[in-house]
Image 1 (tube, one colour):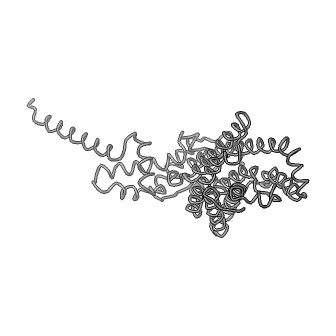
Image 2 (image 1 turned 135 degrees about the vertical axis):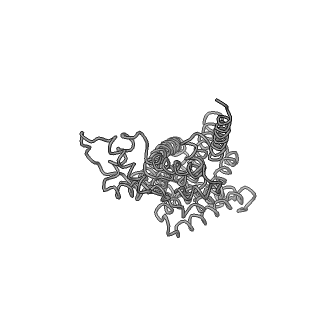
Image 3 (image 1 turned 180 degrees about the vertical axis):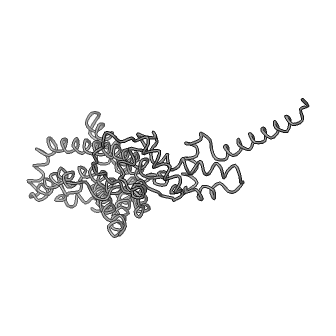
Length: 380
């Protein structure tokens, strides 16, 4: 008898919510490809819940032919996370992206073949072959796949953050809390899978109902990622573009070039422009990004972000000393896009907060004035 109780209802609501978010993501016009990949990831996660939604409601008892229904596409989760993050911060999916999904496609083909078998053959295959040989391999492969792809995604994001530092003046405006949330959620997914499967194989077989906490965590992850994914669906990140290979003449004086180009940036006051990027500065200097980056890093020992924010902080220090205007207003005037990026850059450049620096300068000025006044009153 089919009956939706508390357990099946909880999982069913999470699955329905995830399916709705996936549909909305498919209809998004901004970040179209990335959102479609995320929508597919949401669908795969929803399908992962379905055997338990249907099982707790009694569907498998009423319709045993549902055995081997293609709900478990675990081998697709890791690749989809990786491809989504890649497409979110680069102009296109990596070349040969479909190769990452081949193992999942092979596993899906096998599941569809088994699902199409007559019921008696299906049950015999499950007991004699699938449970004994194939299921352990599928489980281990899914765990390994998710672990490898999460690692690859973490490494890629570290490379992207380094790229932001070298190419964008306001790197703090482009933090990736959503990406971090996604990776942490999928890491939790992996930990839960490993934990329950370890108990199942080493301690004792876990029944269908014993695994409910596992799927409750999955349901929470689906709902959390659905909310955050939709909230950030229109978020635009600077796109990391691979630089063209440029041969480096051995006679280049990078220190001189770096000093000259930095002086040009300072004198033209390009640093006042919020969101100034390496590519735009290279274009104005009639050079390429590789040469400009090399001149700043090798010639001056400072990356693009540090050079631009250094000019902004120097200009700001003069204003802080001469006026008591609002700090945020002053920061915006010299090119910072927000108070957060301004505070971080100022601390990196001076080792102090803007307020503390202003106070210290006022105190030093007061001491110097007092010393001069005392000196004038001394009789030779």
